[in-house]
Every structure is written in C-alpha cells, then in structure tokens.
Length: 291
Image (cartoon, rainbow, N blue to C red; front, side, top):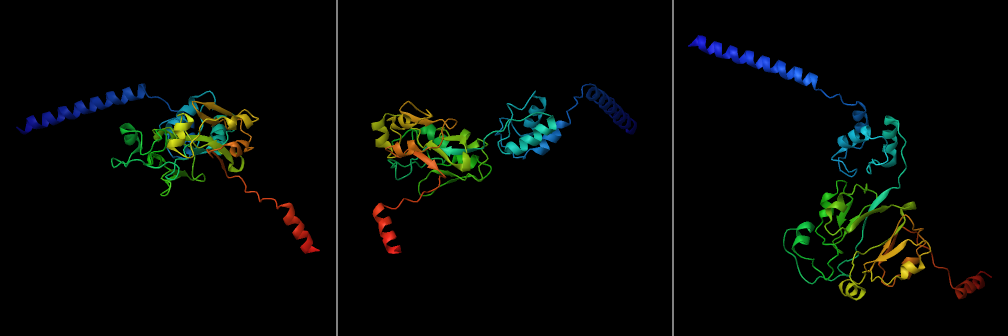
C-alpha cells in the first residue's frame, strides 16, 4: 500500500516537473519584449487613471504613446503641457502646446429660472431619471440635478449648489479629464478653452425648442433670436436649432453678445468689474469742492 502511494506521488511530481519545463520553454520562446520607455512614460504621468486621454489608464496611454509615430493624437489633460513636455523628451518627439480647458455647464435652469412642476422620488441618478422621463420642469433639455457628474469627477471639482440645484465647477481643481461630460445623459457639460486669465464667454443653455416654448420653460433660456450673432464681428456665433453657440476658437472676448442678449443666456466669466464713470454733474461738484 505504501509503495503504491509513493509511486503515485513520484509519478505526479515527475509529471509536474515535465509540464513546468514545457511551460518555461514556451514562455521563453514566445516572450514579448516590452519597450522600457513605457515605464518611463508611465512614471512621468500623473497616475490618475481617469481615462481623460481616451485610454483605460496611464499604462495604456504610455504604451500607445511609445508605439505612435508622434504625439499629435495623444495628450494627457490632467498633466497638461508640462507633463507632455516630459513625455516628448523621453520619446524624442515634439509636442504641440494645447490651451488649458475647463468644464462648463451649458444650463442656467436654476430653481428660480426653471420652476419645478413635479417631484421625482426615484433613484437619485441622472441616467436613470433621464430614461424614465424628461425631468422635473418643462425644459426637456435641462440639468436633472442628481449629481452623476459630481460622482464621476475624481478630482472633487464638481458640487451641487443646494440653492440652484445645479452643478458648479471649481476651475482650480478641474483637470478637463472629461469624465463629467461622459456622465451627463443630457450632454450639458462641455470642455471649453479656459481662456486668457480664465476669462470666457459661453451660452448657458441647451434648449432647442422655439423661443416661445423655451421662455415658458426657463426665464434664462436662449430663444434663438440671433441678436448675438449679428453683433459678433468675429462670426464666432451660430444659430442652429433655435439655439446660439459660441465657437471659443473664434471668440475674442469682446462681450458685445453678452450685452446684446435680451434674456441673459450668455455668460461672461472672470472678467474684471469696471467701476462706472462718474456723471458730469458729480465731477463738477468734486472740482468745486476741491477749489
């Protein structure tokens, strides 16, 4: 009995050893040598693994960058130009500078501007809510306010304002990774150029209904009147499907469209507040007082 047991153990051990040798030689023969530059590129990246570059993670981005003939189609939005300079130096490529971007909410449908007509008490998810019905207001294009974008942001750059029930972007924390744009089922969040000194102009509306219906749904909704497009000397504004859109690559930040919009649907962000000039009568009084 003992002899049979030992023979069995010996045969299994020998078989295991032979299989191990076979696997070793197979692995040796079909081993794929990995470019060592992949590790170097991965170390240069921020390690966020956010997917903003279009790849599953930083490792996948590094692998694609090493294999690509140039870096024209590969860019890390989290690391920005500084990180991409390091990547280009490792690979011996040239890199084109890209303007920093920031997430922008193209909806101004706050509780004040867009009154609620019903109450949703289901799962607090914009995606689920959008699949069930148009929303709590008359605007079928507006923000649903459940915060899917907030949950998707790995950098804490988004939060829901408790008064307006709209998401707000902290531009200092926003890396323009695009996770929020993918999370919004209404497509309300757009990545736009941050602009010089963080100044930018955009239409905070996505309603494509005709003007009269938009006004019923939201006080701040774009009515597609076209006045903004007429005053834009740069031809940066187009009207399509009853909705104005500003091309940030053409916009010169003159703000004429902001002043022209009768609804207030066009927002100008981070512009310096100019002090109003004193009236002529007030200037005369000051001069008289000085004398």
